[in-house]
Image (cartoon, rainbow, N blue to C red; front, side, top):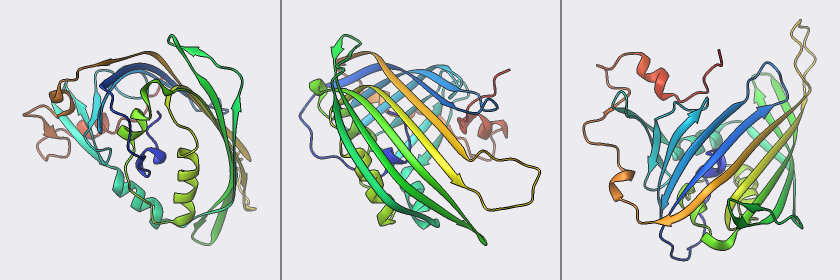
Length: 273
């Protein structure tokens, strides 16, 4: 659910035929650092084959009233109806940039376990599948190598009721070009099928910090938790016009737009007052 690197680099197999799916969901991200505020949102998603739309209803992650549309998961268009402009995000470019970086993935391990707690989420019975990934990631920065040991636990409560329709809409066939990174992403994405009604992703990282004489104390460990829950889901007939940027809207990087346009359309979490 969450739109991340994983949503940019893996194509799924052909799917059963379903009508369009609309679902409402809640999402929250938090970190074990009191200086970093939690991010949250409520949204409504519409999926019709490869086409998708997500309307942001409330929360501090994206400006309420804005939305994102896509017809192939490669090009995402973030739309601001209030100012009648949009910005484009190319997932292929992101994947290529990651592949060209000096990231190195080693010591990958993966396990998959089906757990007995079959939750009922939004009136639908689900199966709990837990995926655990561990790996080391190294980033070379000038003369230093920064290394992290990462353990990611992905708890998915899924239903086969809608097939893999959501994965088809939010993924594409892009690759980073880094075999280790692509292998890690594929391992994460290919182990669980079905429509995820609830997902909890817990990422714990331990950082090997180089010895530097500094007053700045950096934490050696960090835990980030992303939680997503569907609150309602149903099939419907979707109007194709819902997946288009409205006629007359301008790109946010047009020279005659005010500078604040880029700030609005970066869609960064707002700072709580």
